[in-house]
Length: 469
Image 1 (cartoon, rainbow, N blue to C red):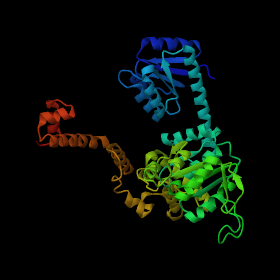
Image 2: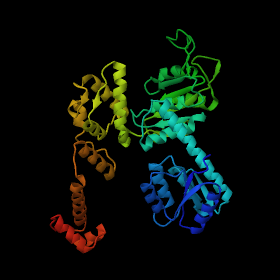
Image 3: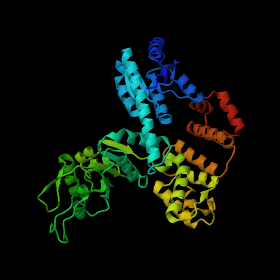
Image 4: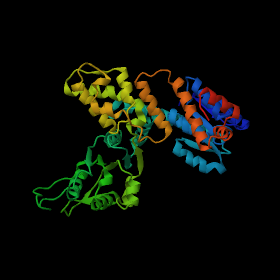
């Protein structure tokens, strides 16, 4: 363990900071102390060196420890955060796990426990860096630098020594099967087979035979013994795609196999042991299907041991340039054609789109362009007509004004719009003022109060923006 690791201590209590600073320094660590989360965040933005571990209190003036944790987990997910809390704050500490806390340290604490916890956090961070680096170097199956995808990498790393059942959720085309295959490749079962089956694409009367196999003569057309996917996946991983569409009868039999670890072939009398890890996936809301009686609740809980949600492509649009280049390179190799390149303007334009078909749609577009684009440089005019047309109005399905603004900005930047703040700022204020005036019946004093301005400020803004009352 690196004894010169840097630890940040964030607490508004001078005595807590002093005790931890002395103890950690004596243990061989470098420390930096902050009296508020706001000071730590400001320092983080202005420094090139990140700490190995952050220890922060929950309740402080200004930004709270939980708000700090949320921001750190989003922007610096590789840094372990230890939450300090009084005993009365244990509920908050437990809730902080959902936001990515490494561990919590209850007050009052034993100083040796604090040092041990810091050492564990450093070892954990080093292990995670190795896991993520290993995934990125060894696997070209999943690509992404976005925080959401880095979270998937970390989850695969954490699961690399386990045999737990995993349920993957996400929209169609996000790459759920690729994540399932990566889970298999980085697991103790990597030397065994990876078998996939789309349970929603097979008729109910054939699905049980596909899953569990059948004996000769079990039904009309069963001319020979058939080993099902469970037997084919023996010692490896069985990926059950579109599990939400599985027929009720098949759900019942699958539950029995997961509960007992044994099954019979259709028409068979010999019990067969199932040494298989299950990874399931769905693009549906399974909780909703359970409440509607369309999916067995007990089976849902059997499958929902570890849950991974794959983000849609528009949620990680910063990965689109990397994906575009990867797909063009791979397609050129597969089709034995010249590798083409996107102009910067085309990449910006494609990065601004919603991509309802997600990564699958992006890959298919790259394959089309590899064959159909007239020159090596792919311009916006070379894109398929449906891609260009669908870019016109994609805000209808956006949740929240922030996301709508983000999409608007991406479109403007894709069309080389400059000095955009100069245009947007007055329009933003105009909308605020006009909406407030409409709400108050054009009464300026009440509108100013709603906006958090003084009356003179509102009067000045009305004059600057030429808004008539």
